[in-house]
Each structure stands twice: as structure tokens, then as C-alpha cells.
Image (cartoon, rainbow, N blue to C red; front, side, top):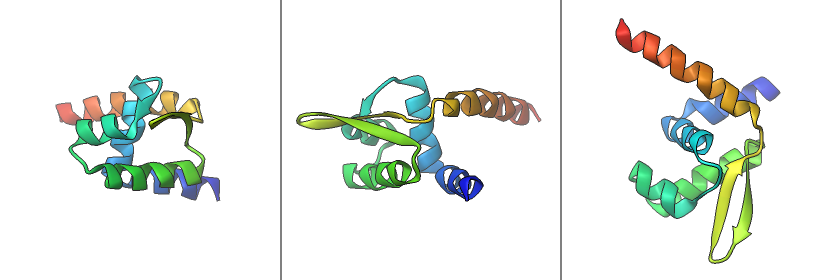
Length: 92
């Protein structure tokens, strides 16, 4: 079910952070994601693989790295709303 895919993608704080990074960046490597989120590259890769398998991200091979980007551009709209909600909730 598509709604279950969305729920699974954003259930994890790490995956939300990765999607949020991709929301702000056009393309980003596993190394950059791991460094920014203080993760091992293998952990970042596992989360990216799940997001890829769910259909949220895609990648471009730029040896020696893969550059990941949002496959579903509407995720940008979701995170615009998400950021607004988080700001409002943080004021309470």
C-alpha cells in the first residue's frame, strides 16, 4: 500500500533526516550523508537502500560514489509542510 510505504520511509528519524537533507540538496553522496548525520557509511547505505527500494530516492553513478537524489519531487512539498508543523509545535 502506498501509504504504508510513506509511513515506513518517515518512521525512522534517520530516514527523515536523510530525506530532509535531500530536500535541501539536489544530489548527495553516502559519505556526505554519513558525515552530516554522524553515521557509519554502512548505516547510511542501509537507510538509502530502503528509501530506494520504497521508491523515494534514486541514484546516479559518479565513480567512485553514487549520488542520491529525490525520485518523488513532491517530498519537497511534504517537508515544507513538515518544517512548518515542527516550528509551530516547538513554540508550544
